[in-house]
Image (cartoon, rainbow, N blue to C red; front, side, top):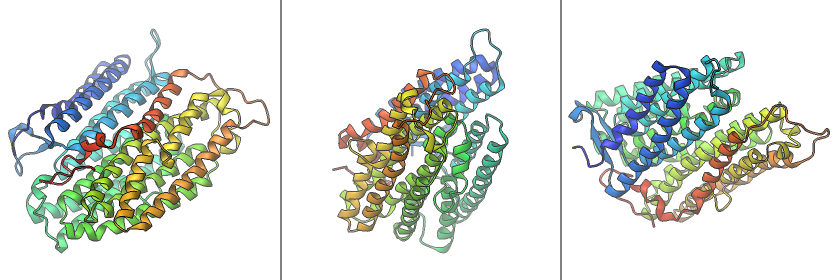
Length: 500
């Protein structure tokens, strides 16, 4: 294993936000804002170049840190999924930073605030942790990246300092720490059995024996706890609903995806196929339960942000439907399911970030987030309501959105492999999603009993950011299917899959 051409971009993608974070911490609040915007903007350009380099190489980019190869050294690894998710994360983070200027900008001559300084610094810290989680090639260092991600996200979620925020985020921390302990126990078992934690070295070595099964079970339990997969979702709704809109956007849109990418590494790279095939129906079953339960509970919510949070519980479930479909044995259906799962992760990131930002704007404009009293919102904050609706179309799977393409790929793979029950779940979940999205949009376009007025001045900038993210979630579905060939690169060690 040697350094591949273009692998220097992998290092840049990781080091750039780290340097920005350290510089912001040293230079202070007013400079932190400019540094964060510049760094995250450059991050989008670097992520684009990295994705182009992976696509041009047609193989994962590998960078041994310090020139040391596993098992003594560590590697950074950028395959198609890592490149796609890194680009998704870079765009969403830059958009969230632009959104945050309305609240956390320091005006010329104004006093610097601690909250603004913390927002910009921890946003850069979260960008660095995401890059480490997507590009890491070692199971233990991926654990370290997830821990950094958790604490950066917690800091953003508690930024307002309200007691209710601390209570909900402490529950998040409890679940995250339990998940970390389980994951760490699994990595210890792997290291004891194989003497390495490098993902590429473990590929093909893992045996279908009791220690491997136990290690994988512990690690999977830890990761699904961090992802809030049903029934370990209890921390997510209060944590996301109680956080500021910008924090909710990155929590739901990005933070959960790091654990998802690690699960893909574990089950499709490390684990022997016989164990992966056995575990896949269980994971998909939990995903199906998440879709149905999360959607039904979302339909009953009286608060807008709680509705969106339970929608996240439901939408996470679609990511797990890909597991039995990828392992079904049909090469074409497998490639489609893989693309559908990764595209669902990306389109959900854009749509859910847009939805949380729009919900925050609506709640701020009306002075409340009661779903039954949203009348007049479409007149007061029209772009935010349109952004919410467009994001909802993607979550429902209405063409031509990215969510439609993702769910269509999963659905056709289910039908092609004879697993029609997953197709029924996808269709049913889309109908339920339509129900709770309609509740919000119908109420927002309705009339208020009293003439609704803006509770506080509404800036156009944040509305435009939410609308842009929603438009991206829709425009993903207009790209030709061949555009997603990137995510097939490095799908399996030593194998290439062509998307039909």
